[in-house]
Amino acid sequence: MDWIQLNDIIKASKNILIVSHINPDGDTLGSMCGLYSAIRDNFRKKSNMLLMSKCPEIFKFIPYVDEAKHVSEFDKSREYDLVINVDVASEDRMFESAVLFQKAKHTVNIDHHVTNENYGELNFVSPNASSTGEVLYSLMTKMNWKISSKTAECLYTAILTDTGAFKYNNTNSNALKVAGALVDIGVVPSDIYRYCYESNTKEHVLFQAYCLNNAEFLENDKIAYITVFKKDMEKFNAAEDCTEGLAEKLRAIKSVEVAFIVKQISSTASKVSMRSENVDISAVCQKFGGGGHKLAAGCLIKAAVPDATKKILDEVKNLKL
Image (cartoon, rainbow, N blue to C red):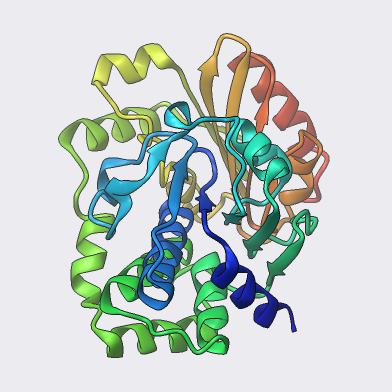
């Protein structure tokens, strides 16, 4: 079985790297730190953790996250015995870490995105799972690993955030069972919820209010979108994670079937985050090299915000809304 092979490879590896995806969310960070914690507890080994982007302030509470290093701090010439990607849906999402993944003696891909193409030597991809945190919990229990309170906090954060505090339609019975098991280990749900959803800065709240006030609506309010420019972020002193949750707020409007955010990365690149009530938007994002889930997906388009917005709108208007 693959999970037995994974256990053996971890046991034999002298240097291990765990990689999270660019623009990290609670699932990739919780999964990365949860795996780091579990390897530390069960094998007495200290792994390296790689961040492709700055860790959002609200996730600074996650155990061990402060030990993660930014990709700019890594020696790209180093060869690891084992590189494990967590919640990295595609090879494109590796960005600068791709060279480390490709040179590793062993590679593992742990994820839950339906668009994942099983690009690792070992692949643990469960599209029916709520989160990568849920996939990891399953692996840890199969391998009979000890799950400490710190590991449990990490995995609970991953599940909580990727289910939208257990309100998205990916909140299945197993996600709730796993969450319950993690609570039994020692997680305090109210604490994790407060850290994730009630710890925003004034700048974050005011910037999101500004964005929502400038939202655009089309097709009898079935389509809603927001464009975000760096100049506006600077005006409000908003952090890089300032757009997190905006698409969900638009999708919560009764008439809206597809909502998306187009955020300026540079003069020639834009990040798109899409959400839908019942339309498969992963297919839209895949056309631009992205992916994700049927109702929650994203991509990076090599175009300025206005052009990127038009490209997405052209695809969305072709959907049956």
